Length: 235
Image 1 (cartoon, one colour):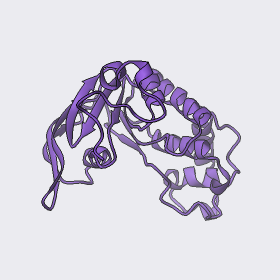
Image 2 (tube, one colour):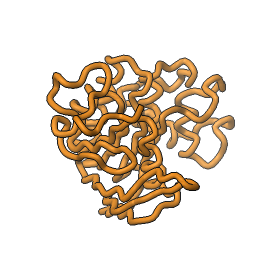
Image 3 (cartoon, one colour):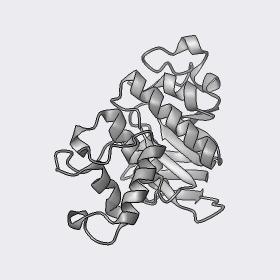
């Protein structure tokens, strides 16, 4: 995926200004920046949900599917739906209340095994931990296999162990499928673990490079993002 001079305006406000970046196959590109910097808007523009000026070329080699992992599940988590039913919804023609087809059940089991949740088919969605829920959403986004996977703050609200498990999964998907992955993150430890390329976004691109080039040396980032001099978050 290659983005060139992408701008988004909402009324009189510029949300993104002439943003240019690329996400290559087999690499994880992490977007960082303060709240209101335009990171989620950029994801929305790639998905075709937000009008923009400029160019976004997806540059696909095959079928050209884009997978998307939202910040949270849009549906009410108190609904009495199991993990298998949730994953089967887009994978069979009739409603899951009428039963899950053998083909869909087989596919669901394979997806759960891939995200290290084998045997969780009968668990209710509302019973999942935050990390388990995020991995179910990734499983849903990975079938059919995408060439570009967009993850909007997948680590939000997770404990450190769950984030590390999530990061191992993303790196495995990157390496096994050579998927281009774009991740929005506010977690400096996560950025350093998974970021092949890191872009600091604050309406426009402020800096892009390795994690050290964008965030500074490892000791400079603690529990709160420490942006490089001249690129501090807006207060």
